[in-house]
Each structure stands twice: as structure tokens, then as C-alpha cells.
Image (cartoon, rainbow, N blue to C red):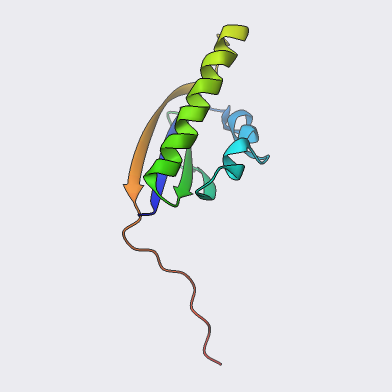
Length: 111
């Protein structure tokens, strides 16, 4: 069963481009087995804070969980070797996992 994982990140107003830049380059996630697609969506109309929605699509949940375990392992080791930024632009985030129940792709145009 294909899944899409949505990570909604709330960002201090005016600092969205700083966070968006982190997603411009290809990352390790793009090489993981089972990874299909990443979309980074920038919300346009939120007056209190800026918001990005990071959506990744996976062949199935087990591939996502393998990547997540790998990522958490790397983050744990990175935190030991670096100090946390006090001035982080991130206010918070929420992770949701969805089953892709229906997906439509473009059809060939009739000539």
C-alpha cells in the first residue's frame, strides 16, 4: 500500500525562505529504497506564521519506517556533536501518515 507522509512545519514569520533552502538540494531520502516522490508546499495565506508542508510518497509504510529509523539515528549522533541553535526559525511541526487511497494520473489526450 502506497503512503504519503505529510510534515507540516510552522516557521517564524519572514523566515520561510531560510527553511525552504534546506529542501532545494537532493538529500539522502531521495536515494532510499521505496521512496517515490517529494513535494515541498509553501502556504501563501497564514498571517501569524509561515508554513511549509513536506510531502513524501513511499511504496509502503515499511520503507518509510526504515528511513525514519535511519534519520533518527543520524540526528541523535549529530546532536551530540553540535549545539542547538537558540534562534531556530522552526516554531513546531506535525507529522501525519496517509494511505494513498486514490490517485489519478494524466490520461493521453484524444487527438
